[in-house]
Image (cartoon, rainbow, N blue to C red):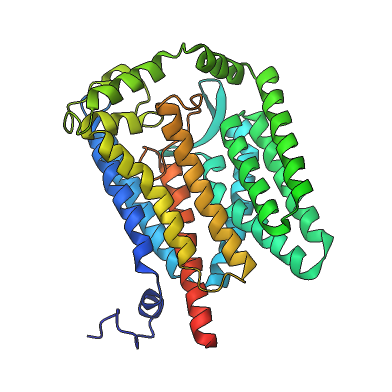
Length: 367
């Protein structure tokens, strides 16, 4: 039987696997393993063994999606991502009608055996779509591309404000601003976006009580969850207290999402926490180095934006655990529990790996 890793294999898997940048798979698989350890550690608290079973199911599906997307031809993937973008926006639009509320926010849609969060799933596809339309505008100078993309972003912003999901909205605004800066490289635009960002933060502070509450508590140092998180990190020390031996998970509700980083440090130590923190920027660096033809604006800027999105969300989750920023409810990519979050980053990881592969292939074929 022909080995699918051989260069002369013309099958769908074989021909695409050969030109993949294999090193880019290392980080998401390491993160997956760490995530399984973290969720396993929570068994026996408020969570039963069902939590780890569901986590492994979500993770298995996400890894299959990641690998499948990485194997597709670049243009096919781009079209699929655009279709995903439209589909997830449609789902996002029905959240206020059919969604259910948790802690004052309506962000999820239930489908009997599982729930999805459209705003989470939309992250990767909307970044790719917006980047693609900016690229088309640069190439053709046709303003219709910018008009359609900005109308789409405006609709998403309104839908997120209705939920409300201010944390996710800030992520979207940050990444869209980054894409504009990458394509247009204009100092005046940078200053304008900065003023818009500050203005938006002020609006959310004065008009959304839960945002003001979190920020005020953060500034006053009066957040018991963050205090417990810091205490757990101090208890863990350099090498941790051991898998399953931490106490933070018994003290903080929803510890499988917001404070999963603190749980890992308590049980595995600060050195492990530093190792985990560096995995995200290392993937960013590896992805950037895999781009052999940086003159392809769409590929280069999309990879940069998706990797920055991943690092930004990781920073927000870690930063809230160590009291750098107010708690936001953001998951730690590919580690925290949550099917929508894992699938969202499977799409992002798969897209980055795919675009790196196709860029290398295109360059090699042209030589």
